[in-house]
Amino acid sequence: MKSITKSFAGVTVLDNIQFDLMEGEVHALMGENGAGKSTLMKILTGVYTKDSGIVEKLDQGGNMVQMEHITPKEAQEKGISIVFQEFNLLNNMSIAENVFIGREPKTKAGTMDWKKLYADTRDILKRVKVDKEPRVLVSELSVAEKQLVEIAKCLSYQADIIVLDEPTSSLTDREVDILFDLITELKSKGTSIIYISHRMEEIFKITDRITVFRDGKFVDTFKTADTTNEELVQCMIGRKLNLEKNTQAKDYKDKDVALEVKNVNVNVTLKSKPFDFRLHKGEILGFFGLVGAGRTEMARIIFGIDKADKAEVYKNGRKIILKSPIDAINNGIALIPEDRKELGLVLSLSVQNNLVLSCLKNLSPIRARKAEEKEIALKYIKDLSVALSSEEQAVEELSGGNQQKVVLGKWLAMKPDILIMDEPTRGIDVGAKAEIYSIMRQLAENGTSILMISSEMPEILHISDRVIVLYEGQKTLDAPVTGLNQEKLMHAAIGGI
Ligand SMILES: Nc1ncnc2c1ncn2[C@@H]1O[C@H](COP(=O)(O)OP(=O)(O)OP(=O)(O)O)[C@@H](O)[C@H]1O
Ligand SMILES: [Mg+2]
Image (cartoon, rainbow, N blue to C red; front, side, top):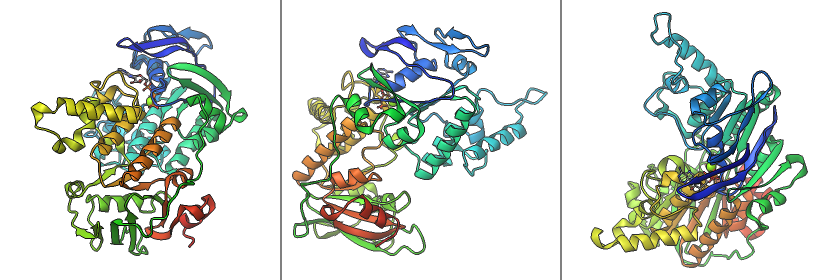
């Protein structure tokens, strides 16, 4: 791809971009939220048309041929396949219908060949180790399973170029391993892969080269083996960024207890015993654990989504009854969920309308509140540096990471006393991560108590005052961050006490 330029409504989002991909290579695209990664990929796959520039691809005969204004279908026929950042499956159709949509196998009589459809789908599901029947509705799949089905569908086109746009943001470690095995297998067959992710570990593990964009411009291409984490970060955000351990951590032991949770049993295994914990006013409490340790389940109980028979929740010393999220919200508790892609936003509404959703009841009657809404929207757009052209823009036009920032903003606007954040920086670029941490600090200083669930140890150590580690639904550690390090966290996360 040479000198690619693209603008939306007069705003240039890709400015003279270059990118090349070799046979059998895994090439990462990196850059902050809104840098233009997904847009470039949509041009490659015919979803958007470029304003100018050249796209060339090797054809079957070994010649480079120009691809001028192709449609998504033509891109597919030319051997380019993509897993989009956003979900694209149709919830009320079966897995098999989704995988073969538009290319369903037909019988001699011209009707749908259900037998072949199901058999072929079964083979495809096996490749990604999803143990579901082809006729199961997509709506019945978990977020991770949906993502694996998308990947399986993409692979089934037998493409020679595969684009994976943040394929792992909703996968757990086990599923990431399945994906990486598949990538290795594809590579060995000469398939080329473009891999977009904000997770450094993955980038270093699976890619051969890395190209960095900043603000719609090409910055550099590196050989993965010749670069470092620091160099990439600096390249992406134009400055250094260190995630140091929290040196300002305070001990809240003698401070007011904002939230006390007793007897919570997350039932991860039969063995798991109920546990108690306290969150103090203005404290940031980190919840660490491996995937499946029960952290999300615990959050769902405190937010009134799931019932826990014996769990008791006290706020400011007073017992509260949580039958539904409404009860939690009325008690000043907010939860920023893990699967923001599905649960967080009304995509067709404007950024402003989404941002004010959780605080509507605090605003003036409908006629008088336009200005208030705008003020709130502008505040959070600024605080979170959401990249957009105007607060009136529909959320669906924002880049993936910027959509996530809107979800965060929506809950911050509610000004909760207790804020539960489940993997708050997933899918968010390094620069914006730092902004989110400073917002968390600020909130805590103003008296908000924060419970943050995270699977990233550096993040836990950087932001928490105190850390609780869960292992199979049991508390294996509860200590101020001051005496902790990565080894101690890991030790507790695998069950050591
Ligand atoms: N359909 C559209 N209409 C208007 N603006 C758009 C549209 N699609 C993308 N943009 C804008 O183009 C810019 C680049 O977006 P893009 O989705 O390519 O970013 P990205 O690098 O993939 O970011 P992320 O890491 O958040 O996924 C953003 O500012 C976005 O708002
Ligand atoms: Mg993107």
